[in-house]
Image: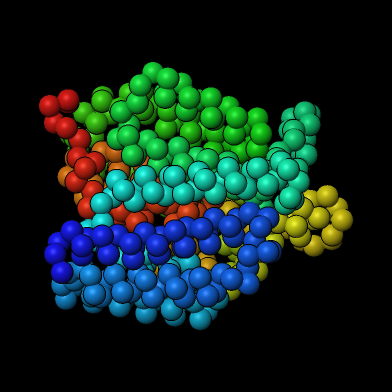
Length: 390
């Protein structure tokens, strides 16, 4: 088999698997999930088969790589038995199957695929073919309307758009023209106006500011490889510290809980005080305002207690367990350091944005959001910053 033919087969196997896993994870966050859910399990079996074929038959793996793969999968399967959540199982297979694939092609592929799926979902919602859950909240005495446009909750809509902005910025290596830079802030305004997704709006704006000052930021990052790893580590553990040390009688904590965390901090505190940290995790029942049940709860038509752990880091610690939490944090620090050392500043910056987002939300283990996970073992040399520009 000649090199080109083999490469075509590898791409066919890998990107077919990628279409399936991203589509399944995307539709799980839409109101189409009730229609498509009977097919999810068989589709994910096909995904696993395709990725394993690529991993074992069409890529070079040394002993350390294979040992690491099996170790992480065993840990993921143990966690699955405790939680019935297979997210980490699928993520590990997807990461290792992405080895040596062109990273820029992965980013472009996911950007186009998710954008198409999002437009398709929004059109169905606007045509009334699927539910468009609309929520009304009182914010500082002002009534605010939030639309989901076919997603299970408005923040899902905001997050999907936000991660596609990140993907586009990475694909372009943050090299945008004036119109594209302005467009980022326009998108942030639309996200705020339609979904009132504050976290997404703020991080999209932050990404836009980074795009404007990208060259001086790269110049700064070139001076030290430990800035982003250190900042990431601080963000993760400080968010956990706040949850475990929340003081219900403190005006300061009450202020940041309502103004900064939208009551997420208090619910995180309740979770931290209720559930112990276990090595391989545990099942924790959560009920948010997303989906049909959550919509009925929010509108007082169904009386069920609201309880949701929004922060990924607290979820990782309590649900996925200490082992997976440490693996995740260790991976964030290691790859932040490595990408920075290799002058892949666009990857470092997007990683930091994802770290920030997961203080408030929990998309780290979903390929349809966290496309960066698929680049950890992929070929990312195309993201090396051109030295002559610094």
